[in-house]
Length: 240
Image (cartoon, rainbow, N blue to C red):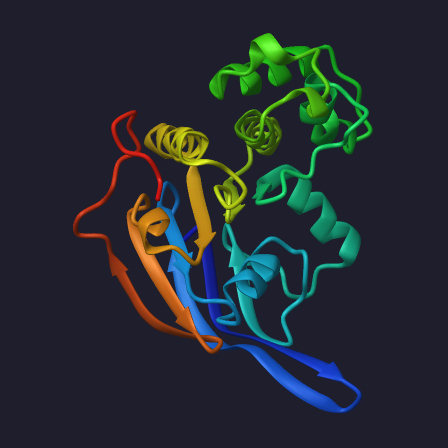
């Protein structure tokens, strides 16, 4: 086994007052290091639940999950939290920036969760901000930024710990077309540099900026195939 991510019969069932609701139904797939995979489906397809399980934000009800050849199924919550902080970066639709802290402080947060103050923190934060073109905004507060700028800061925060994979959940959902295109261009550039990207979206247009699409419906994978005509985010192409 050599895949970055491999899941086998991964299942999630929610229980509410004795009623069982399957959200993800025994799915099996793998993601190699350096891939750009889009997980796509309509509301209720199970795509967001899948991302939550892959990112250790929720535990599966059954099945196996291997991250970098480690079976993480029996890991404690503390162990999963440590892996999540070191190996996984998240980008969410709603940015999730702290409002009363600066751009620099927001990006530095994952480094502080390690409880290790380091003289390298400044360098790491500035490198992450430069990679998304936001180093000149390091002393701004998040409420002083546009939506596109906030999402670029969120991407920098996801990058600062040099994670193995970035999970992006509807990263353009709250953005105008120009800002959305800029965000997708950043994700494509990161992937070109070797970073593994897993994008969750309900939009075909956005999904086609990846290299492979896993389509989900009613908790199941209905197709898994490479993208024949990949879209590239450029100034001349605005996200619909």
